[in-house]
Length: 326
Image (cartoon, rainbow, N blue to C red; front, top):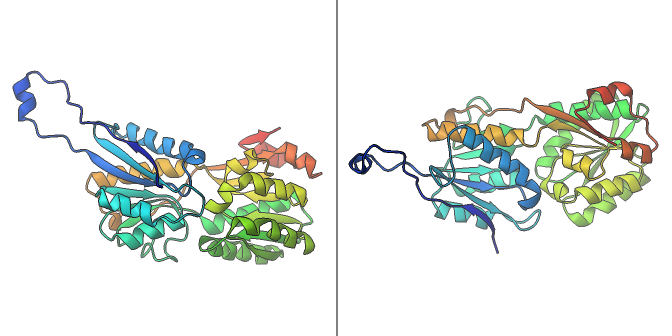
């Protein structure tokens, strides 16, 4: 069964001087936006609320000139084929897709409906766009800064655990492979050995932590993945159980008990996506709209978790934090 959150309304007429004038005016365009979250909608509602708010700022009012057709999978890691097919049957004007799996599914299904990534990872390497500057097809949007983000996360781990020489990397294909490569580049420059832990299913997670503990990893990077997002509390608990200081890519992990996160605001992607949608509605072609990267970043630290791990967070790091959970 497809989980749906569909916002439908009728076109609202403006204030007119006379009924005859109203009859003479052409019908107002009602745009239809297909929205595909990377996983179940409830834990991601704040992201899509940011998208809707930015649309309102740009003059799009649900039920007056825009309809949002939201199709979300019922569980993490579920197929997106049926959801995308449903949106194509509705002949939506644009598809806004979040996460590599949803974006790739949409790209395979249509070459004519504009697709906005919110966000995508390694769009060039995955063949979604020809280049960031000139996408050249029907896909554009926001891309994760994979290399920069993972290099920064490794540096932050070094600040927290200065003597760490072996760091585990938890990742899931397909997008996780790109993130792993980015961490490897940074680790080589810093003289850090990496332990690659591929864990693509929920059942693989604890085994990965057991492997990290046996290999005497001293810290962990958890790469971006919808599967991990759905298991964030479990992953945070396992990191504490196995005494592994871990860094994540979204604040939700730290709020669930994780140690630290660094990355773009998880709502900024969606605000940027709304701007892409507006440009497309005004006549721009995805092929000509350069892929953008986020400009707003967050650092969140959980002091309670740090204490439980026996760690002292450097004061200089606390001063740089956007949020400290005590």
